[in-house]
Length: 208
Length: 196
Image 1 (cartoon, chains in turn purple, red):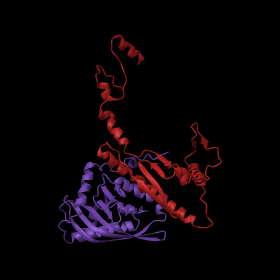
Image 2 (cartoon, one colour; image 1 turned 120 degrees about the vertical axis):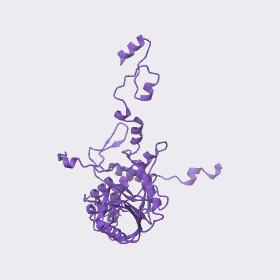
Image 3 (cartoon, rainbow over the protein chains, first blue to last red; image 1 turned 60 degrees about the vertical axis):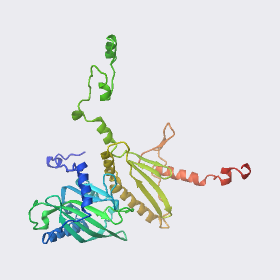
Image 4 (tube, one colour; image 1 turned 30 degrees about the vertical axis):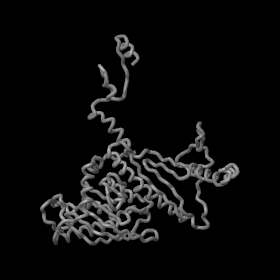
């Protein structure tokens, strides 16, 4: 029986109601936006964005998932399509199409100790490069497209998983404000397009 | 209700019950609304019916030898070699419903492949690793065997607790029956050449 009656705990509601038809339109807009990056943003902002992505990837590689999720907004998306062209999440199954709630579930599950596909956990090292950083059409948001190579070691096997990331980042300082440090950034949407998205990927239960 | 029908008949009318709002309003002079009202307060029957098509069917049906119907998924098991098996999942959509319902089904159908199936696969791989050890040639599937938990119901269906392994034994019993039964050769199937 659940005897926890602490009102502070009971009032917590993840804000998951944002995955509606409009949200899917936004995501489809991303798919188009990644094809033709706009005018690159200049230093030092570009360097701060790159440092933020390095932090984001390092936290995952270190298994620090709670701190990692703190880098995401409450209306975030973590998306791994299963196709490499004509991507459309409204009609296609995805390896992941996680809103905030499911992303929290994913981490809770990994922490249960009974997620056998991560016992022992994958050890990963991801390298990002080829960064293109430009202002989003939405004020206060930045788009990044970059290449990624993930090396994964688990139970005697090394896997190499290449692809690219598309990030929509939001400045907590708001539109127009000068970016001064990486802690001012949050991930609104992270799209993971794997080179082998459409072949059986086996155990992909680590955070990509 | 019978009393109301008698009273209506006396004055040349009729009374009937229906659960459909549109049907109730059709040609009615008086509507006595019980347990339903405006969609704002009591929901929309169509919306609820459609939403019921979103989540998984709560079903796990294994059809011998290799077809599984799990929630909204079809799963096909194809043994390829002695040490490899392909397990294919097929998502499903429904025709004639709003697009949003099929999108909802996509999201629902990502649940188990992301949160459950990988653990199953990890266990299959662990079992396979164990099976290649010469001294460990057997997997024990005897749980529940020889207990009074396994019963045959009045339709001849063997039933038992979901945690027992009699359904797995059933698979191998059927496999054994087929593999040890008499085979029918080509000529027996086609009849002798003289008949043609």
